[in-house]
Amino acid sequence: QVQLMESGGGLVQAGGSLRLSCAASGSIFSIDTMAWYRQPLGKQRELVATITSGGTTYYAVSVQGRFTISRDNTKNTVYLQMNSLKPEDTAVYYCRADRVFTGSWHDYWGQGTQVTVSS
Image 1 (cartoon, rainbow, N blue to C red):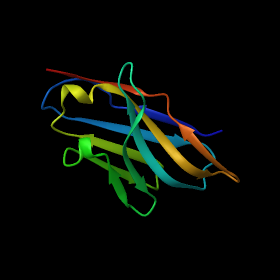
Image 2: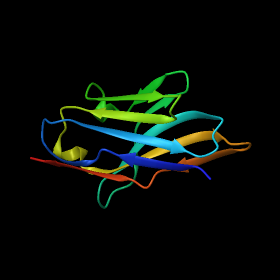
Image 3: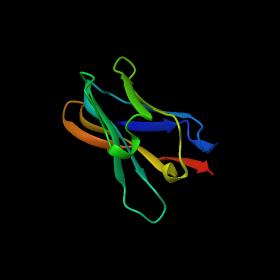
Image 4: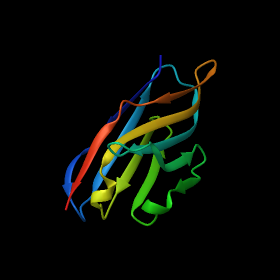
């Protein structure tokens, strides 16, 4: 059983910073790609950033230059450093782990953490 546990969400003023963490636990041999998604209230879930096991990153245009994704493969943990936050960044942020090998391949989602940016 693999679980993803997010932390670090909260309330911050516009222009401020937050750092999200997501730790994967369980009998994990490897994780291919880890990612952050977000879902604003009443809207669809959208991709924010991804990072492969080799460190290749991808960012949505809306967060380029403000957010940084990183990971610690020894801890099966992914981070999202969010700077220069805007009210439109307000959403529930979800962690995702793609192609997790535990003896077979599966994808997993975290439970989400709320980020609220006040103007």
